[in-house]
Image 1: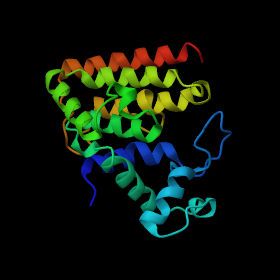
Image 2: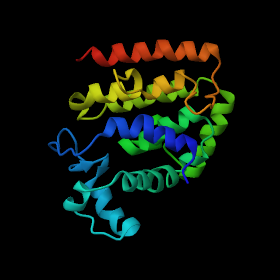
Image 3: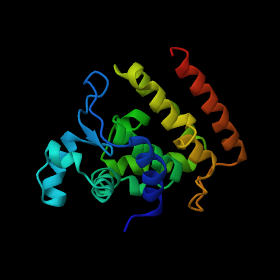
Image 4: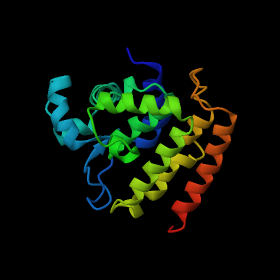
Length: 210
């Protein structure tokens, strides 16, 4: 039912990094009550449509893995035309950007329908093997501009660039060539080496204010 790159994004990035129930103060997390990464606002809108149940705090606290996966696929992957992006690493980066906020705009594609933006990314990627690097840096700059950056920088940095002892980052998946699915990112050896140094530079940059 779900394509391999959605499955990779969900299993390697979304599920490990999102965890369970979170209800932090609005300053740190404007999304409010969240479970499996699904915010109460999204749940209120989608639970009746997708599952025929009330979209309230009680049902969100009981959200199943299958329901969370369906929301990630229907409300984000398909709606934002992530399935139309060709480069696997960019596909996962954009998917995580629309999920986390900022979307296409945060990686440098602010205008057009989502399908048009995906098409422009494909055209740019065909001309520029380093596009993923550029988009990753744009995402970091965007995150640093947010008011709640200081409250979230370690988690955002690890998710994007550094990973931790048990979870991979988006950059690490790209450096691996997404070989967990046998797919190729489309970057040559020089591009992969560049990603390594970019990852280190981004990490150092974000930690200057730690």
